[in-house]
Length: 238
Image (cartoon, rainbow, N blue to C red):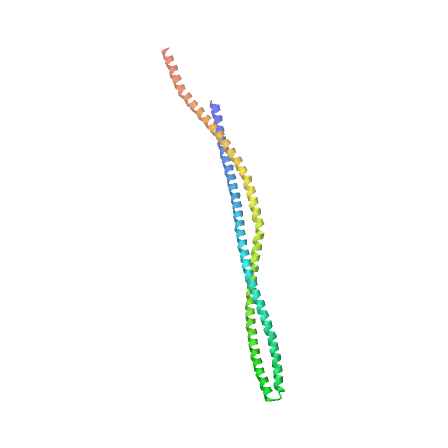
């Protein structure tokens, strides 16, 4: 019994060590599953967030494009008005030259007065057209600067969209790899959990046997003094 008890105690010790190692490996597998699931979750969240940002920026780009189109239309319209005014200004200046010639070669005071009145009207009109062209050119310059600023804003938005779109494959790859790794370690976790349970079962059985042997040993130890007393009584009777 002593040899069997020693052997069983040794087995229990070994099984406890195996149980500790099995628990350690199981916890490690659990941690790996948790890490890769977390990485997959972050990648999924990142993709969703990226999609929302891209969609929002596309809407922003569309709004900016609308404003840019309107500003360009305004610029083109002002350009046409300026061109029309410049054409009229050129004609009015030709009229001034003609009126000046008429004044110079007038044959009578009436012709001269009419030509001078026409010259004053033409000079007034030239001043008005010159001021109109000047104001429209200022407006055109302002709108042209706005177009340049808006174009830069749109360019930056488009650049962001392109950059974020290019990062999507990397996130998708990380997500796929994390999912694959999580599934792999999930199987590893199942195997480690079963192994731990198997060792625990063996340890429980060994502990039970050990308790039974210790109980038998204790019972046997109690019987020995009783036998000695009985033997001593028999001896004294003789």
